[in-house]
Image 1 (cartoon, rainbow, N blue to C red):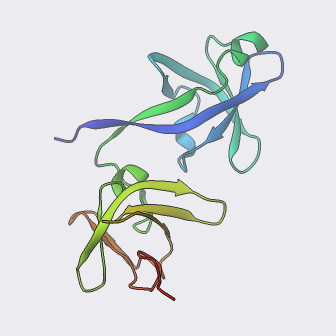
Image 2: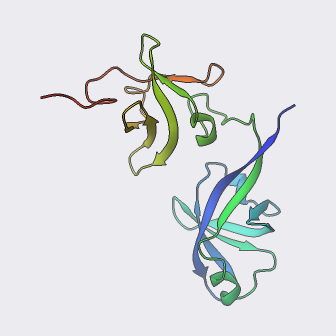
Length: 172
């Protein structure tokens, strides 16, 4: 039986207007996370989405039940919004992964030699970046197919291209 996990789906950036609307930076590719009636956690509080609409590619204007004034909204700026999801929930596209599934994977070279472990996923403007902890340092590896050709969640591993300077310093 699968358990559940709380994942960050957004961060409240600022108030919007005078009726308690909030600008939320979305950290989710799942629009249903902010659908009317959705319940999100903010600290120990449960927040029910009353309405939401896109502001731009990464931001939404969200109204929560019980947040009725600009002052109510401004008091929430900086808060993380979390959704409870099944531990085994995966994106519909087989080539996409949730951060929580990547963190902890063993990074291996194409010959199956372990070289480190994924300790974080950074979300850059151009692509996501894996933070790999090796024996001597933390290395940043762009999460693109040319550098990370395979990910196997069932085996708890991913393959990193064996390129000079990617996971170790290059001697001149």
